[in-house]
Length: 129
Image (cartoon, rainbow, N blue to C red; front, side, top):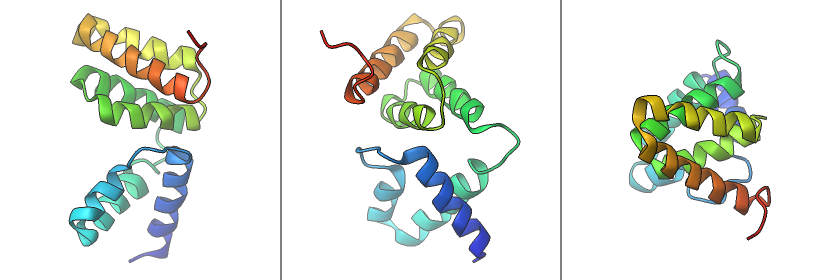
């Protein structure tokens, strides 16, 4: 295995998921199959997310839009944190979610905004009620 891809995987995972308290997908995969978890991580984090064709903030906004449209709240929560970690402004994240209303419907947008609010509250970035 190339040291370069392992190094890229570790660096990208640290960039995206530092400070994420919830179980990360790699940890879930590893609980079932260590070898497959490594292969998936090297591909997804080390090859796809480490690519420099799109800046990390843009890549995360695309991911937020897709997960919003698909209604995948658990994965969305993880990538909302990753979006914040790579420097996406809260306003840009919210706007990305609002944009999905046209294509995925208002219920998907509302669910994603609630998830964003939860993430922001947990990080102390949302006013207390």
